[in-house]
Length: 293
Image 1 (cartoon, rainbow, N blue to C red):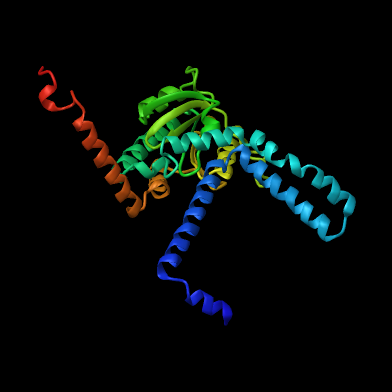
Image 2 (image 1 turned 135 degrees about the vertical axis):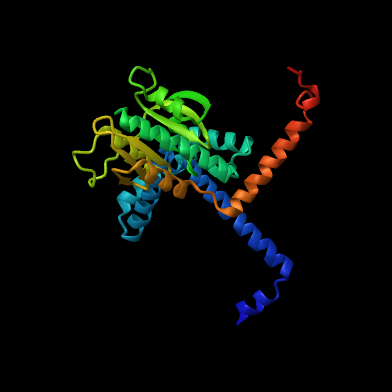
């Protein structure tokens, strides 16, 4: 009763501020998890959880020697955290500095842009399957893949069927590896992906498909695979592999997996409108100042 009386004394403004404060903290924690998920820091974070769990269990069971040994390393914790998480901390600060911390990937794209990109992907997959050209295309969603992008060859090009066929052509120096797509642009090629070590993966699964499973297990990316041996088209998402898909089925599945909710699409539309308005305000961009042909 005393607790309820104290709760009733809280004003509406104080309660609103408290709710906003809790939601802000939850949002920051969620975004930090999204930044480190799928990277080395994710495994390190789980290792720290296990370490503190051992400290708690050893103290609970009165294992004094083990508890003393584990507590010896606790004073080194802050320095160790900075050293272990230095790349991820730097990356998170860079994301905040570029204002990417509030959203990434497909959020900035509208439905028309996603449809155009999916059409190009399904067309490229159909052409490469017919020609028996192996391909591995990773489409980034919410979880960042910067650690994988850094190991490949940087690019910045609009997704097109012709460019994908050129990249994965056996004579191309970039064909051996994966292509990473962010938004509707190819940001890197010839990237090395982590291989899946799941016991569910059979011995008949080739390296390209194991790589597709590996990155889809560690992130929320959608991976398009074309088999060089059989010409089979597959999709990997959330650690599952959908094999033997027809091009039209690939298109349908990609549209379903990459579609943007209407609420987020509205925000994206506002962003694109503001960007277009600011670009028109820049000197030298108006139609009156363009040279006539």
